[in-house]
Length: 243
Image (cartoon, rainbow, N blue to C red):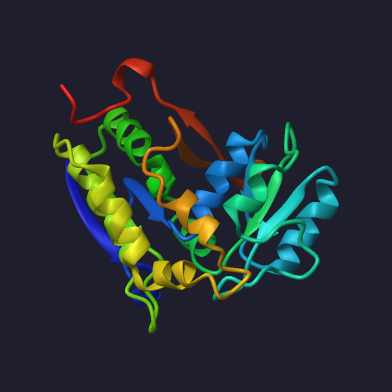
């Protein structure tokens, strides 16, 4: 299985897009938040690119809740939740759809929504995502790194890609090595400082919990809308790389 990397903020508008399997990675925090939301009972997640599109969709789906943040992590005024897994842990989401808008992860998903198989990746879903990819057996897996910015190394997302890639190649890596990289990345250290109420240390702890969940996040289109839903991994094959 061939693998490669793309960095969202380095892409040219006319660049050739991958057509097989794509994993858009946003560990801090979009797709960690999405995973915790589905674990808390959300029925599905609708990623949308703009704040206005989120409010427009909520008008069409009045039972839906909204979650998201602007660049840097501040919550969006008028949304039900920020982009925070710790805020969603105790939320009552059973059966309710969630509309998500973020500056990096969601933008990456929408950019690559025409590929054959699209996943939202984070460390909490690492092994499950690898297992879902192994079940599909694509010729190529493209990892899209969304966390690299002018002032951020994006190593939280690169670490997640390294972890999944090692699993795809039959290795059995220690997940704590990659969790430590999430915590020590440029953005991770901002959470460790715990000096910004919108970047709590509790979020970092939840996002750096490797393999917290046994499902992957698969993105598909239905009724013209991109949706994230759980792709359950069979219990007997939930640990790729372990024989």
